[in-house]
Length: 167
Image 1 (spheres, rainbow, N blue to C red):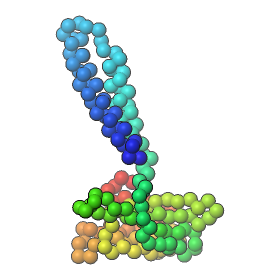
Image 2: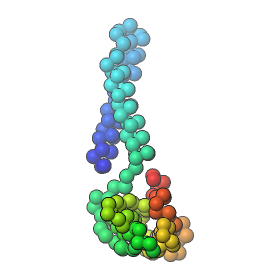
Image 3: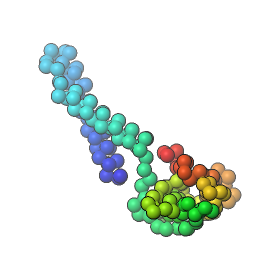
Image 4: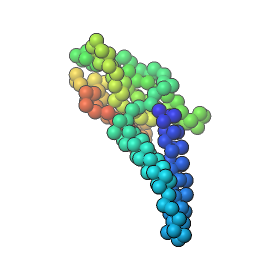
């Protein structure tokens, strides 16, 4: 996923440069009556479409990126044994960084399908508790700092949470 983002950034940078060059050529076309820069227009439009497709992909087909993860807590089996919840963490940013935390649900059947339902910065107080057969209460709070509370109840069959609003 990181390579796809880097590639999209390269396409965006190239498209901006081509657009600026196209504007200069368009100005020359109007002033000196030179041939219209058709190939340049096509290149700018293709780059714009590629960047829009990448933005649309991020918006409508969002996936959580969890390549370098470590197991944190679990397994926590739902009351009807339909789901298994596990929590994972990933450090970022070196010494000045932090910790991301996510909860993954595994369907306890023959397919064993996995689904990430929660993603947030890790706080010092973390716990998971099943409220009923489909509702998982995730506590992720920093005691003494009410604005740092990312706790939530999620219907694991239908809801997901990302603290930055990406999901």
